[in-house]
Image 1 (cartoon, one colour):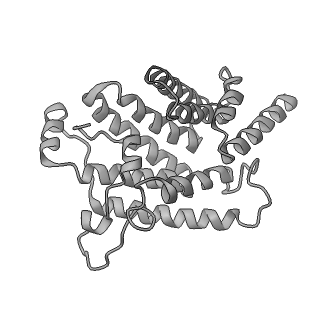
Image 2 (tube, helix red, strand yellow; image 1 turned 30 degrees about the horizontal axis):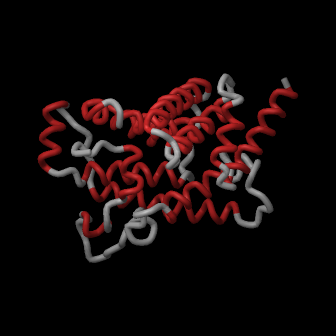
Length: 259
């Protein structure tokens, strides 16, 4: 049992190193060897790796669909093995969103409730995870800005469709920024993040780097600095107080009905 645990830790360390190095295909090849694993930490990483492979330009549409559904299955199993894993909740939410692209508008809207629930749980389990907080902000932003005709369609499908406000979105973006800054500070001074599975108290620096990549470096994601433009004169925050739409992450989680 001790030997098995040591083996898992070794694989996790190697996986985190490959992830931080941007070795997407090597990471996928490593983790697929453990697709029958009962370990939640391996499974959610495999879900993430499967999703990353699905988004490579060389992946065919047929392969992408298969990988998206496989990623969801891995994330689901990770959650079943450990409901206290914030990362399992986060990647389950993201993978549900991806599957929605193949299942129509009604499924997308229904999934939005589930996505929100799991992002909120991920934040509850790890309030320091900037990516979960940021994605929750985009969930709020997406539904706050939904045009009236899309709301009408949603109401035809659901009595109470998902809704939010710009104030909620802005609040999450502020929280994500603070979590990112705290995470960077807590990881500073370490010789190597790979394998430090308790850098933030619950997880490795990999997630801090992932947060920085998705929030600060993603295409069309900035909405100013950290995906928003602060305008202190806007007492009632609306789109003008938030900045431009976060295109690069909105496709991850949220059903825009015209898409």
